[in-house]
Every structure is written in structure tokens, then in C-alpha cells.
Amino acid sequence: MLCEDHHRRTTRDPSSIQPLSKFALEVINQLWKTGPVWDGYVVSKTGRDELVDAGLCDRCEGFNFMTKDGVRVMASIPKNVAGQVAMNNLKDERDAILSS
Image (cartoon, rainbow, N blue to C red):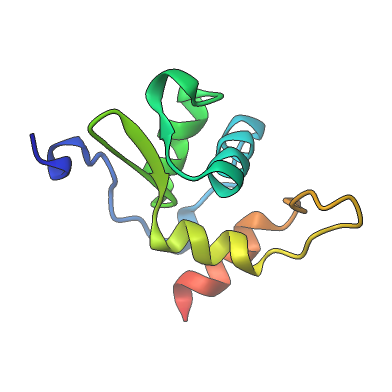
């Protein structure tokens, strides 16, 4: 089975992108920290679906992984003192990166 069969991503106008839910933020943080995650271990399938729709995550053969855009967004977000990802401005960061 080809991974392209699993794509649910749509082309969206960047101005129509909504801020990510707490579920999507948990998933993108999980993927950032651990790399590809088997479907049964993803912290939120709803959050994962939201990331797929936003083009930040994709799926193939039962695995979930960050796309190139997802990695760019996460790499650009500053870390706080505790080392956790500061997610408050994720939408703005993503928009800036994708528009460049």
C-alpha cells in the first residue's frame, strides 16, 4: 500500500488556518520528542488528524510522523527554561515559515 493513499491533507489558504487545539499541540510535541509514533501510541487521534489537515503531520503504514513543515515550525519555536516547547504562538510561527 502506498502512503499517498492515506493523505487527507487539503490545500488551504494560510489566512484560514485556525490555532491548533491542545490535542494537536500534545501530538506535535510527542512527534517532536520521539520521532515516528505507531498509531496505537499517538496521544490523540483527533489531534493527529488536525495536524494532518494542517500539513504538519502525515501517516503511512500505521505510523505518524512530522512533515518537513512540521519540523520547520517546531525548530523555530523558542524553548522555555524547563525545556518544554512554548506553543502559544504556534499559528503565527507556522504562518511565517510557510509564507517564506
